[in-house]
Image (tube, rainbow, N blue to C red; front, side, top):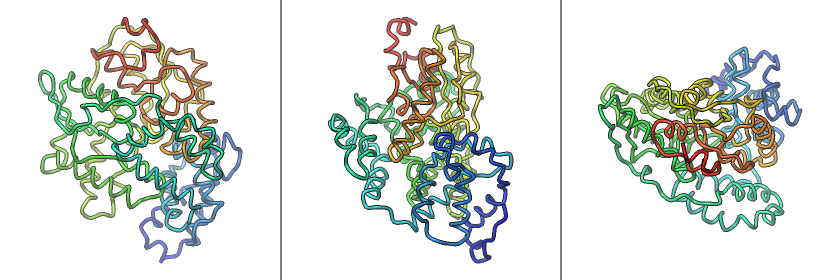
Length: 445
């Protein structure tokens, strides 16, 4: 794609990066076939190619974002399916991140929308605030139909209420900053991302991770200073906050390493693939920060999805569980991190029959806060995904991302569990809570 940025514009590192990305696009349109919003809506401006034209025109002319551009960029899920499809290597992720930051700086949203986004940014990344909000949402759920009638943000607030769990898990000891010693001879030392929303919604995920890793001989460190990875606010265009959250995590994990960077940790284990995609990008995000660029690159290189790490460790074959699992590959897993076969192979090795649904490349509609900010599109994508999953006639759904678990769980009676919970169970841990719906068949194993 031909560009016409001025030399003054290209002096800005963000513009210079975006200009190089734009130049790689050859207008082929392959991305339109795998873009969820284009598949649903059929609007060229709701495809990656269409958004690229809008972003190019906005950045090249150095103008504030307008309502039309904002509408179509907001509809992007950042699922990155387009990057898997693109034959030219267009880094759409970095381009749309720059566009969102530009929108955040130059576009004034309506008051109600600003308030909602501020609420999400100031609640979701903080476990204490998120717990309090979920408690309030629990009592507010019966009023969701009435809330949906509020002009403007009503449907979004109602979607937020419906996503709240019907039962609040208690606080888990795995949340505390501590070091979990290896059981038996120590094979290595890893840090575990505690995270923000996941320990509140599904504490069993990190519990299962710690149990399995320590049984395999790994010391697991949970740092007191790490927190939200920054993905939630980053996808809303708030670079200042997301970069601050990234710096905090980089400092926390880099402090766990020996001088020279990385010698004290074999890996940083991530159990939410949406977080993994962002943490693996810390080196790029903080590339212009002289104090954090090198540590961020070291941390990004150490980051591993838990299934990615377990594949390198090597697990033995476990007895057949007699259960069929529909594996939903989160977009941040298959498109963001390019981890495609490892989770399925691990599940098969653990004794499960694994099926992958049709249209596995399409997003389920979770996408961070997307299912709150774009509830109608998100619901259509969820229903389409679940229809494909149910055709597999599987007993349960496994996935590697808490957002997908919440999204899918809101539309089906099938148990939805994290991949690591099944692996922990197969290798000596307790059966996941989510399998109670299967009755005695699973509990007897």
